[in-house]
Image (cartoon, rainbow, N blue to C red; front, top):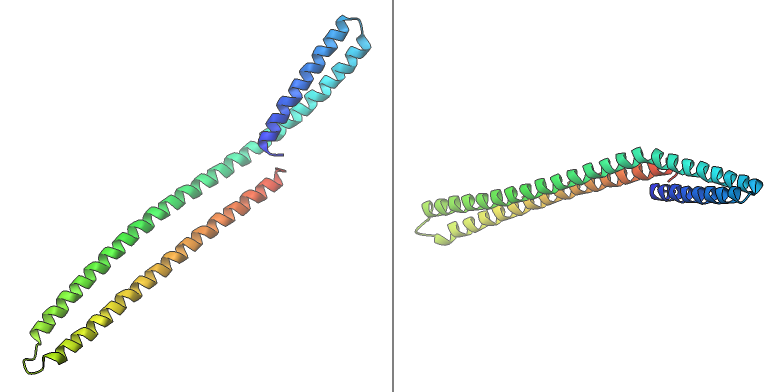
Length: 176
């Protein structure tokens, strides 16, 4: 049974004990002491079961509190990780843009400085090759950054799974 069921069972047994006790008082007032004793015994049994249900509920409370705390910590960690990821993506995008801009400016200046009046196409093709290499390099860096972020999310997911497994094991051990 889970905690809620234990609490509900305790209340139900308390109600049964009260009803049996009232019936015993009613019978005792009517002069039926033997029948009254039977209902008093029923009330005692119900009170015993109420006490057992209350104890089971109380035993589960520390585990529930502990599991709730673990879940809250995991949620907080996940939120912090998402915020950090967002921050890192923004920083990466800014750096990629700045790098491309600086490279483009340098290439422009080099091209302007090295223009051969006799053969303008040779310098232009070298410049084009250099731009392609820089674009490929930037794309490779983006792919590396993306794969690193995927690995971080996989690690976070596995932490969440192991916490769930631990929580279920704890629930099994408490008989929930």
